[in-house]
Length: 98
Image (tube, rainbow, N blue to C red):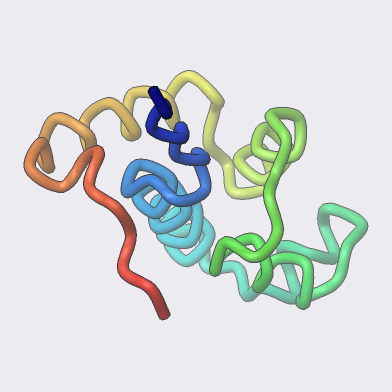
């Protein structure tokens, strides 16, 4: 009997919500992609790739992103939890193909 393959986290709706939050946090900090990238020792293309999901961030990179934007990891975690609670019908649904 074949088992159903586990969906990768990058294909889950939760991942898209997290990317949207990261972009929103950057924009609320009044930082362009170039400015954030520079502060992280990266370029604008890195930030863009992260925001659209074609490049994954590890937890330390997320923490650095947040720090540059003036937010703590704990506050970000709370915002993620709040977003998931507000959108229960969207969580665990597959992302739309682009």
